[in-house]
Length: 252
Image (tube, rainbow, N blue to C red; front, side, top):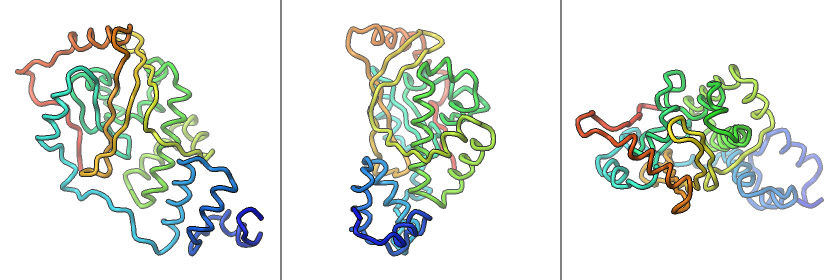
């Protein structure tokens, strides 16, 4: 009644048949179900995937290389951990402090610098992320959102299949169909070198690389976390003779 469509039409939508559904009906449905921003975007993505609408633009393979100018930009940020990941939860690259912060993920051969694999398949994740339950919910919800945006992304589908097969915790969360935006918030980390950190994070889209997202962490000046970040920076200062910076990009 709220969406002004018939019961039969709504039942068809509930079964997943969104082909030909107008934007007005989708807007009414979103309001009737009191969907939040992430849930509304996911509904629209599902409708795009079901109907003859233009596909979302994605970056060309040649745009997936870490450009020298981007590398210089990241390295110029010395007081805050900054890192870039893609839609498959792979850490693509990071500045030195970002690499130091996420060293347990980047250096874990089983995770292959993938935050979702580390979260759900590495037992050490619960110690590294003290708020593991919330972090696991966020990753599962974010992956569900990405899957709606890119239903034919084989690398993403393969990752989700791997996690569903190997992790009961992920399988339970995936079955809930929750979606979530990962844009800003507080990240709590127990780092093996410097201890507990409470970091604010901001996520930024990267128009030149539509499948990449830049994350920056900051701490309240003068706080315990700020001092521990400075200590981490001093403990892990890069050696100019140590070789190339961390860049884990590929053909995915």
